Length: 275
Length: 343
Image (cartoon, rainbow over all chains, first blue to last red; front, side, top):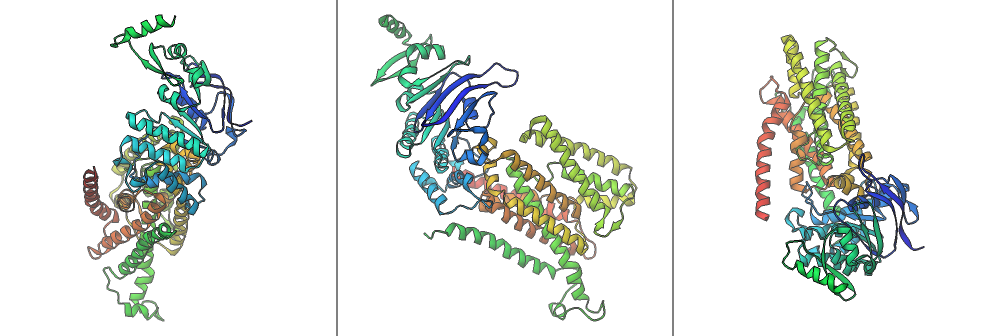
């Protein structure tokens, strides 16, 4: 048993609404890179909030390191899982270094003073994310991509076996999207971190992740390797959209094309060819 | 780089305002309507009471009052800094949770019902102010809790609504009050430091310092909380517990301060802001330095209030408001210019 996360029969409902997640079963191996994908409103972020105990399951269980998630104190859980939410500008003018240092707060005593080890981990995290050069600057004066790297640096300083990310690339340009995923892959390879990323970008996920959890809007789901899950038929079914599919290496890439797209007819001819 | 430069820097940053506070307190002890000579004070107490007036004024009147002003400054500034972090609102201040109107209602009730007499540790006014403010804070929490499980916005709104309602009741009561009772109430509402007995000083000093000390232990959690609830949870902070503790402690120290001096405005709003502009938002520094700066500010303000017009004393709240308003504007202008330059 090398599973760091075990999810069994997990269900969740917001009050007076349809079930968002129903009987979800999956396990994440240590050192795995998992993508959670699916259409808007399917419950991706809800699942992320369940995995970091911000929400409580209606039924079923989540185990982290073979221990039920409810059995962890907030502090103990923060030593297992670091969460990176979508980047934002804090109300107060914290510097990059101050924000990254907060990653050490689950380990601090009553007066919150960092020791040498804490400081070294913060320095390492700044170096790993290439943010040392603006360590003294305020978060308000960074670009969105730089800010996202700062929040990832904080999660790295938190020194947890698991990293949980909520759409880490959604507001970034192409170069910065790739930079973030390279950074995450590096963390997986060098530090054997387990990485779970909620994402809309299935093409990037196909290139960087081993496994995918695809959640449907009707509480159905699909779990497997990227090659199993990212097939034309399943993507079109889960996202209810027609896509142009191409293969690079062994992974598919999908380009969604609407009715009025210039090259929509290519999809139809492709479908005929496949038959 | 030395390994502990950060800690040394931090210590120095706290020692400077501490030294400044001690210097200001010593200096202000010799300022006032009565001239006091250091030489006569050093002679010590006279055999017959009243022979060495200088000594008696300094030890019996000025020093206790200066300590009182410092304590109130510490309480209000710390409470302001903490509430701004928890409510994630730079305009939050110690009275926002209904403490002011609750205390005001308590005081006016005491005065109007003729229950304002003195006993061993002060007067019933103090007691009523304390009870009023604690009751109102509890009421605001209750509304905030049932309306939205401690969401920042619901708490703020509950505070505003309760404040408005109680202010209306206070206005109603003042409008039907007799003029002699009115002056005491108005002075109190404006914030007025007066001499208090040694018992009161000890009691309030210990309460305020203990409360402030407990708040210091929340400092690094407040850093996380000021990023928002979910962020703080992800960083291992038990948000409900920390918020409850922060609110309870700020309510307590503010209520003690209010019961001593009435409503002194601006200290809790301006001091944390000014300090944050200089030392940054890290609460591990912000809280102690705000506390010390608040004390300096109020000791100076009270010295002006008691000496500027000879025998006639001004309420200190007037001084803090007159000095605080423009000071705040200057800071704001300087601050926004700094931002636009960087961008």
